[in-house]
Amino acid sequence: MQQRISYLQIALGIMIFSSAAYPALAIEKAPGEKERLKSCERAICKMILLKKPAGKDLKCDLTKTWLKSDIKKGGKRKISWGFGDAQCTTKISIPRRTIIAAMTQKKATLVLRRQTAICKVERGGKIKTVRAVLSPKLKTKWGKAKKLWINLKELDGPADIKGTVWTAAGLADSLGLFHRNMIKGINKFAHVKCRKKFGEEFGLSSKTSAAKK
Image (cartoon, rainbow, N blue to C red; front, side, top):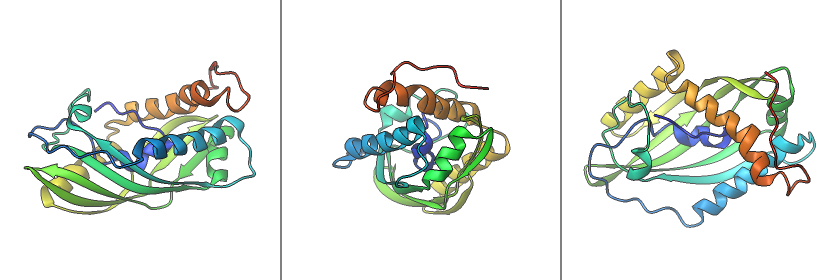
């Protein structure tokens, strides 16, 4: 499935890999969901663009809702997702020094602390709860993402949903399934979207420049 994934979306994106096959019971977006996502996006973009080592770490309480129509926009459907809407809530915590290193060093490895996502998934007209614990790892070169591992550690929930997620996570890490689109999404966020949306606010040009390879 084609994903648009930034650093702060990695922990949320684990649940959605393909299109829904069953009629979905709509899960309403959480109050303030869009505003919290934008606030966290602004915070990480500020770190990426200004690259200041001093300051607070990134800490965000996020909720992300994927409606059936969103899930069906996926591209290559290599994993069968036979469920409906989904909504995940997580607390993102990333040390500032880790983000700055990933954006400035010739080679760096960004390892997120164990992140817990509590997700609601529509299955057969009912809402089921899934708890996922993961510790994503990202390797960068001159600020560009090169390799990514989801590193799913724990998964609690209905057996059929767990089976789908474990399979998808395993294929992503061992065979690189979704790897290209996820890496592309991270680089677009860090090197294009951040500057376009927040460059002028932080005293920088909104125009992007090619990053070092």
